[in-house]
Length: 101
Ligand code: FES
Image (cartoon, rainbow, N blue to C red):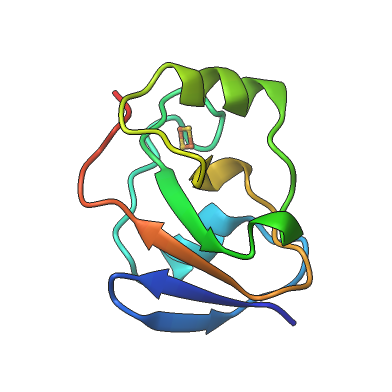
């Protein structure tokens, strides 16, 4: 059962393999925007996956195209609505700004 550590709060949540990262973050009580309700269209759920990137679902074309269009993207960037957990622990950073529109 993978655990998700959320920065900057430091909260750790036990999760289920295959679950969607956005749902985990929302259910944890963290504030994260999701203006398009998970369709990879708004970019507002942009987060950094700091650890465990190789264990989560791979970036698909819609997410890749959206990430290409937003500012502040780096090699650790993902859209939380497009990330499905693998079987390893991950650490994510919720950004203190909305990088989508
Ligand atoms: S909720 Fe809009 S891109 Fe994730």
